[in-house]
Image 1 (cartoon, rainbow, N blue to C red):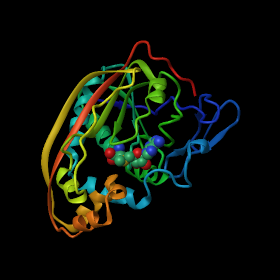
Image 2 (spheres, rainbow, N blue to C red):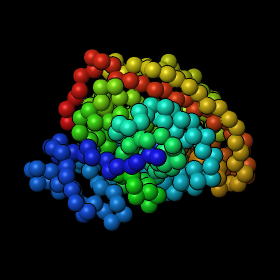
Image 3 (cartoon, rainbow, N blue to C red):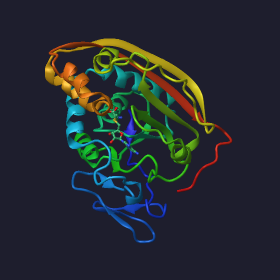
Length: 290
Ligand SMILES: C[S@@+](CC[C@H](N)C(=O)[O-])C[C@H]1O[C@@H](n2cnc3c(N)ncnc32)[C@H](O)[C@@H]1O
């Protein structure tokens, strides 16, 4: 059976010193103190990395994403992610997993459950980071066994070389800080939209679809494997279509007319086309200190 242990590797966002704590707060050796919110998360977002009063997804976007994901439309995306992560685990050694840009916690919570059902003797700690306080509040309501943090991928409040696997799903990878917190054999699992992801929605929103440029990887990482998941699913209410639109960047990019075309529909058949890329830290990668 998988054992879960508390994520032990946090550090102060102000000076990088390790954080230790009790039930109500975390503190570093220099006396910086961070309250553990009653809902169970900690806000370790350094104001320097805050570009607006409420960075990241808004409460409405978090609610739309939760409603869409809870309907199960992306359950196969999460299942495929879980299969890859389970394959990377070594029984009997501690395995720390970070979801960088975890949103409202759907994927990490499902990973927790999938690992919990596993027969192998894994020792796992899970942490989810998101810059949106609203997203982390929603995530903390899902699962108290996971360490939820308000923080930026640009400055992860995590000690160097402590993480085995970082998942970054439909998010904003910051390779320098990922390289810093990953162990030497650590992996990043990127989950991204493939060429035809939600193409039917994009065709409604945009007069013409842009061709994608070739994918480049930073020198600090090497591709280990890639896989693709494709399937069809159907949204059969106007509200579901609106929720999907609201949780994607298309909501901000598409024209008013495009969005009106999508919002006028009561059903929509869609393609999910998701690309998984597993990266490992290149041996010579320099670790950039906080
Ligand atoms: C498209 S959502 C994906 C959320 C989640 N991974 C999922 O697939 O449901 C992107 C998330 O990244 C968060 N985000 C944006 N900038 C970030 C940053 N610099 N650091 C951490 N999270 C960030 C947003 O608040 C949002 O929750």
